[in-house]
Length: 335
Image 1 (tube, rainbow, N blue to C red):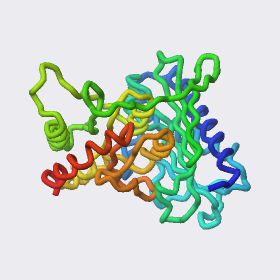
Image 2: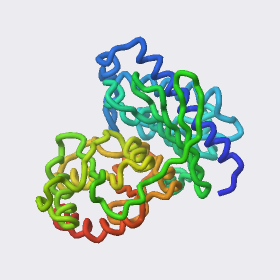
Image 3: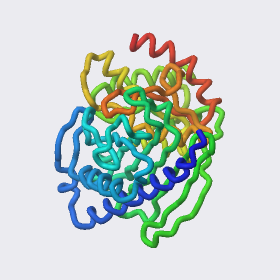
């Protein structure tokens, strides 16, 4: 897609991320972790905490002030239930919008509200195709780090499909911005590296761990080495997981919770939704891989409730090792 607005949209998403980051830093300066962790509401998609409301309030004001009226847009984001229309300019019929934006103002709320680990502001842009608009349609994406109180640096990444990525390190104290080039892992296997599946919450943890244990056992054999070969890390947000792959820390990360919960007969909203993984385009533009667990392209409507199962890899060599081994494991344990 060659629409000249794509460059503008990329820049706007970065500005929006900056706004959310600065609002949250200001809120943290005057509120305790307990206050930020108070439950504000419960939606079909997730529990909304007090800290989430800070990000949501920034969104409406920012779009009203900054989004070009000549590029009418529908906004879909966490905190707004499916079926509620939010468009800019305000009161524009969805049918008259040119674009659809999907947002997660704070991906990693639970990390950030306790000042434990950074969260991320995520945004993606797709041509408006009504209810059929899909993750595959995204043409612009951005992710902005929402730092803990002790951080002076926050990273920001943005991408336009087919044009690679832009990465900047931002000094949140001075506002200075320094370009840098992230380097994904070029490792040819998983030995002595980080790789894991999401087991964030108690629900489904045992079955997910069984899948992961079977994967590593078939690849390398468990209990045959004096020290572990593969290291596990649970970064409780999809944005953070994509970051760990982007920056070269991890070699594989993924989220099978929708499949696991379905097998266990659990009806829970504690899964990845399209707004959580709308930054997959950035990893793909950087040379990484994000796909469905069966190896097919990532595929989900741009809404707030559809479950998304995914796997991400730093490079194709790693993905090629996992695919043929994981498929029979999933068939045996989830089929």
